[in-house]
Length: 464
Image (cartoon, rainbow, N blue to C red; front, side):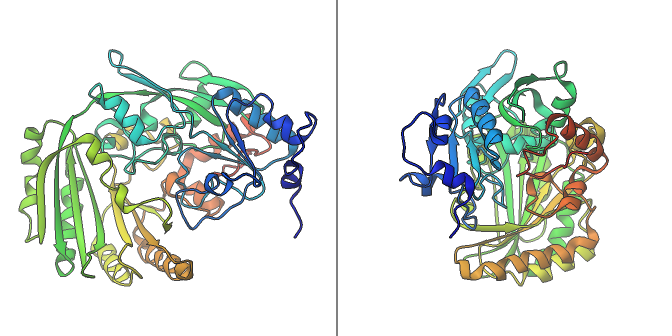
């Protein structure tokens, strides 16, 4: 088998200070892991167990200087580069074959200023770590729904979460960032310093460099929020889905209502709705009451839950190492045609773990002009996507085919847009669907800050 040039260059065990391996090691405060190291197999793994890539080098950065060193070295040696924080991209874009992984997961400093309500956080933090630090002061900002997701990829692609309808996307709460650009410069960006680059970081993904630090606006949240959940039998799902559509679209900003088609341990299908009120539990009771009273659910629950527990509630559904695949699209409503297509297609799910998810957006997210940030699909009401989850590689094709077919069945009812963070490796046109009318401005920024498309393992925007 032919050994790729980069792997061959780094595979020697010589300790000469002139070898490529020692040039890379010199100046690193963090750790360099190579294919010959015992730690390699663990270090190359990402969240999605279906991804099996073998980089030539993995650089665990300790600080921004390490990132500058890694970027500079990778450019000099012609490496393909993947950037990893939490490693949650479903297509495995945070790891690569034969190139370099710049891993930020050990950069976990965070400083919370409770008086100014600002958090300065390094890019290696997971959302669970970030939430724990801010909740110690009774504060939070919008973060995602899986505790070991990295804050970096989440924020750079937009950032959905329970607080989004009340306080906007993760990127809407970004007030400054520090970034290493393709030419190895470390820049601070905010509304005054490099403002166009700062605009591009509000949802434009990892196209413009390696963000090492984020500064967020925080909001008083918790410690407990009211959560109501109901489970409807599958034969009652059509009317429950119609109710969900109207109830969620009429909801105040304080209410976040997600839903899913699920399969119970018995093998029976069901429709689940979960509402979270971002405010005092007492104020939330009359708001959630219609959800609890509708129909004849086979299970229901209403209780005040610590915000940190809410944020980790989905972790058990999406553990590291299982195999995942999805395709997503936005909806403005869930009409009868979409309901019929969804129920018929979900009934064909190949295993009990697979889901059809609705994440509600709207509220404060929708009141921001589309040109205010790269995140363009602000008129959507729901993000809708099938999630195939399985374990046996022999079942790969069946699970991926099911997700694609369900997505295609719902396609006629979508807005045509897509959430950048839910994109896999779906091609240029689908990336354009994520950014809409903002794409040309992003392409111009890409040409300015990364004209050679050095950072291309992402939801890639090609330099114009």
